[in-house]
Structure formats: structure tokens, C-alpha cells
Image (cartoon, rainbow, N blue to C red; front, side):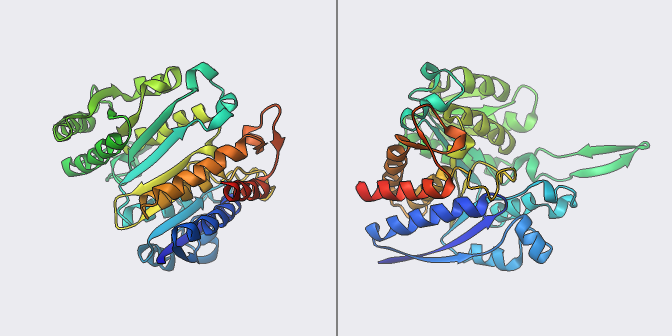
Length: 358
């Protein structure tokens, strides 16, 4: 048996509900692959602020650094929006990513089974689409300095800095090419090199890195065009690599293929461990009502098994169980005619049943 330490940070809103179901799936799959789990739970986000006055307590950060992987639910909500920017829930998430050196965010957008009908896009547009967005996660405009709001000439001025070093671009580009090698050997690098000098450098460095991957078909696309093309013809893409902010936006646009953010998992890798979380937010409007879709978090556990523990077969098993479950059951966000509407807890239980039948 191999023992792995996993930190669970349920976070805010529906976070505890969806992570609870994902943990049950993880506990069910682990023994099949001689994996022993040591699970620790710590607060993060708004829940942590309410307890300790900070969105990321030292003990949570320390536990994350000492773990093999982190499973995060979701952070944030209207309750904490009046707080000073420095202690808002999202700052806890950003510090986790930064301190763990998780510079690469992997966001797959895949149509599972007959979920094609849950998409707001035409079935012929999305059927068969399978896209991976590789997003730079610890640099760019979300972290650049100087930043802030100050008074200039008698009025308030807000400012942020978009900055990337050559080494930051090179390492995320390398991840993009490596992911593309395992897929269909096609990589689209997204930038705004026509108006942003920092992404002009991005294009130059990505092209240089591409020389080490001659098998990969590399193309470049401006971010505004990429947003349109994801909606117009998502099947033209296989793997995309882009900056922090563009990746944030484009991965949510890609979510429209699946019909719901509740279906999108993500992995943040690059350091000694990885962090796994659903793409969706904390959805405080449905918190505690058993309406949340836990499948993105369950699929995130699958990505943990694949990318942190090298258990590709375990990830595939979870995906199969999800596809089988969706043949009959749906949560409200992906409900379709002829399907049975169930809640968060029952969806988790149905996935467990599907796992047992594989």
C-alpha cells in the first residue's frame, strides 16, 4: 500500500457539500489501486476569515505544504465582499497557488455522454469537443506589482501590472507542449501580441519552446478571437496555453460547451504537490439546499489521481462512472427531458453505485 497525505479545504458556500461527495468517491476508488489515504481538513477562504481573521491561516498553509495533494471546494460570497481586498476569501486561494508554486492550471472541457443536449450551443457544434486549457497561474496581472487604488489629481485611480518574465513563459509553454504531446499534438497559444508588449514576448518565447517539440502543430491566436472561436467552433481546438487572466476567461467560455460549470474540474500543478478544485464558484444562492452539482469536484479527484499519483486508470474509472450516472440522473443545472432530477448527496451516491458496477 502507498500512503498519500491529502489536505481537504472545503471552503465556502457549496464547497463543503461537493467536497463531501468527492471524498466518498476517493475513499471508494483508492483501495482498488492499493492507495492508503491520510485526510486532513483545514479552513480556507471566508470560512477561515470568520474563524481566524485571515482567508489562509498559517496552519492551513503549513498543512498544504506538507501534503501530497490539496482538494479545494470553493471560496467567496457576498458576505465577505465588503472586506478589505487583502483579506477577501479569494486572496487565500491565490496565496495557496503562489506559495505552493502551482504555476500551471489544467482545465479540461469535455462533453460527457449525452450531456451534449445540456449545452446552450447547438449539438452539432459541441458534440465530440474535447478541449484542454493550460492557464498560467502564478504570474501576470493578478500578481503583478505595483497595484492598487490611489488619488491622483483629485480623483481615484485604479491600476494593475501585467508582467511576465521569460522564465515564467518558458515553463508554462513547456507544460502546454507536454500536455499536447499526450493528446492530439496540436497547441494554440493565446495572447494579445498586437497591443500588449508582455504578450508579444509570450508569443516569441512560446515559439522558441516549440522548436523542442517538432511533432506539435503550434498556432497563435489573439484572445478576443479565441473567445469567439471557442463558441463558434470549439472542435478546432485541442490544447490551449495562455496567460493567467486570458485563461481565467477562456476556460469559463469553454464551460458553455458542457452546459454547466458544475461539470468542469481543474488541476493546478507545477510545484511538489498539486491542488484540485472545481471551476465553479461557491454558489451561495443554493448553498445548503442539496442542489449543487458535485460532479466537477468528483472529476477533480480523478485529476488528482492522474496527475499527482500517476493513477491514470483510476481517473478513467471515475470518468466512466460519471458518464454511466448521467445516463439516468441529473442535478438541476444539467437537467434534461427524460432524466431523473436528484440532489447533490444522491448524485454522489449514484456515482458510487456506478463505480461498484464497473
